[in-house]
Amino acid sequence: MHLPRPWRDRAGRFSWLKAIVFAATLVPAVLLAVALWRSFGPGGGTVAGVGGPALPGPALLGPALPGPALPGPALPGPAVGGPGLDPFLGALGPRPYTEAIHIAGDWTIRFLLLTLTVTPLRRFGRWSKLLSVRRMLGLATLFYVLVHLGLYIADQNFNLVNVASEIVKRIYLTIGIIAIFGLAALGVTSTDGMIRRMGRNWTRLHSLIYPIAALGLVHYFMQVKIDASIPAFYAGLFLFLMGLRLALKLGLPATLPTALLVAVLSGPATALAEALWYAAATGVDPWRVLAANLDPSVGLRPSAWVVIYAISGSLGAGALSYWFGRQQGPRGRARPAMAAG
View (cartoon, rainbow, N blue to C red):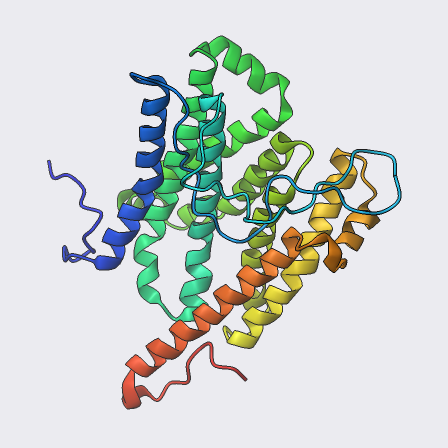
């Protein structure tokens, strides 16, 4: 029996792209395993965290929004210094299992969004080789969500009866387990053999990735309870990726202006999603949330960071399109798919 070699392409040749992506999918797991070992192994104690790079974006906690006192809890705002993507040099804290569960969940969302990024980036950036790593990113998503679930079971002292009871009683856990089962179904059917056997049904089944992603984001919103900055940020990126797909379905060209238009519109969509969530879950006046997105004194809300990331990604895809257009040489004289105009 031959062991799989994820760093090779279909022709059996070594692929730098697949090798780099494969190694990158393992880094968070290795760091998380080391952190847990140091927490529960000989010596124990608080150790370096493994949540992810400290990128700009909405942070977990921040100052309450200014304004007159209104019924309901204060609305958290973004703090200075990062997106709440846990820094590699943070700490697991006094409750290592809880922190590890959150880290694994964060990486599940990140790899899920990366998986959904492949198709738009291939279309808008004309990078066809990206398709070779889509399955790998999807399986990485499944791996981290299973780690997320496994850590939760460990935190419950492996009492499966109690785990099942909690899943039934707590709606956000019920939603989460439905999303996990959905990802498991997609992972099991991701082989070449299953693609051949299922035919068109395979495409129909794997289109469930979109509602599964939505369920995962709802689970994230519900478990953070009050401060929804980070899930709102991820939800905004999801809306941007869905907007790119919708634009193509409506017949808009896969060009830079199209991507930039969707990027700009993703900001108001994110603000609206955030406002509706606060209104439904915490009783905060949604108009207050929307107003905060227009108030520079409050700082950058998730909607602004989504626009920044979306525009940056669109420009990056445009650069890729220009590069691959140049690589074609004068023979094709094809206009780059992401060229302006």
